[in-house]
Length: 109
Image (cartoon, rainbow, N blue to C red; front, side, top):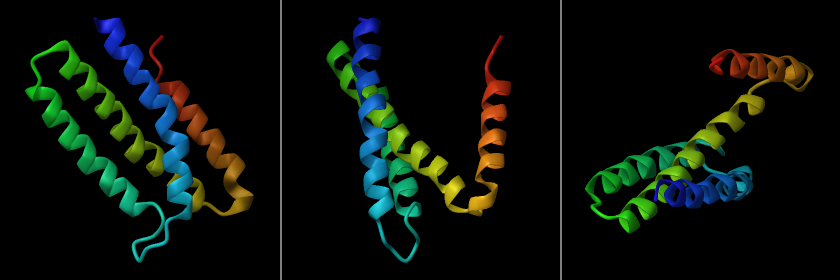
């Protein structure tokens, strides 16, 4: 059952980032392109986690974890997209290097 739940929820992790990225790139609001999506992702993740805590079946767990994976990817990926938005173009390669190095430092050995 665990393989089923994690396998199906991986589809949300795969499908959500490109779609949300497409919409967040085209969003125009007085709070900017990314802030509404980060707020929505955080609130939707909180609601999904509350729902996940209330389920009592494998089907509920499957739906709940799918929603958690999808909503976490909304907020997280849009937040990561703000980094290149705020860095001057001539410094993007250095920021990419820093992000890659930080990601390598967090990996367990």
